[in-house]
Length: 316
Image 1 (cartoon, one colour):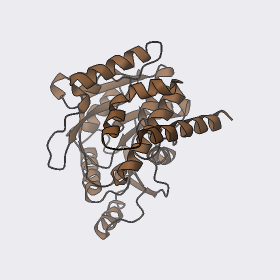
Image 2 (cartoon, one colour):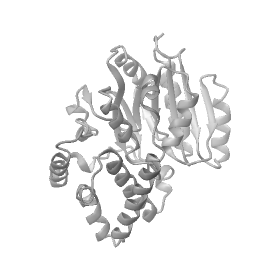
Image 3 (tube, helix red, strand yellow):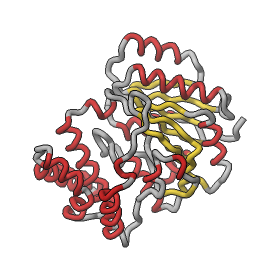
């Protein structure tokens, strides 16, 4: 048995069959791991109403003493993570999305990395998959866009604590990935020592909708405290990009508004960047939206106002 207790937190929102598959994958992996007798799974459900089949499944798995279930009325990913944290009793906290499938040995490899007392967070390798099981290559893996975006970021952040993940371009390319220290990880596959939250606080629930940047915000705070984050490509899961559920339920206009809301809030809060800096960082997204006929100026204006109001309230 591992010396550390593991708490696995699974926030879920409007997922059905894939949620059941996810929880089956987690429970099966636990039973074949070093934490089989020293772990708990906390499901934070933000779904107002499930199908009868899923409701029946959730009732059934509650017979497992490892499983805890809590309903949270507010649909907000950072808030759901925080709800799970308040319940968690483990020394190590692992966050997993509700549309994943773990590879064999996931938890054994994860807990092995915590034998190194320097590691305050351990992040794994999500393999992005579509509904048919085919790999999805990230747009950031190569090409002119990646090069230009990287150059802009380096110039703008030259005097700042940059939060660019050294493994970010390798997330769908296992052959070129290696274990290394990192700045951040993917929210669908990240873990922390519980003591980290005791020292720097919980997730910022001001990140809304798609919750983009909420995990980056937390890793940024870890970086400011010189907490070590370690990436291990042998901690692997398939991240299945479900067609329904999660932030994909948003209308396109709403999705893009919250996308820019979170981006502007992140850069204003942590870097104090002016508006034109942020627009430069998001230039490809802006150009794409203009091409799609969106009122980008209105979206950006709304995001600027929201960020200023939130940060003003935080200072009071």
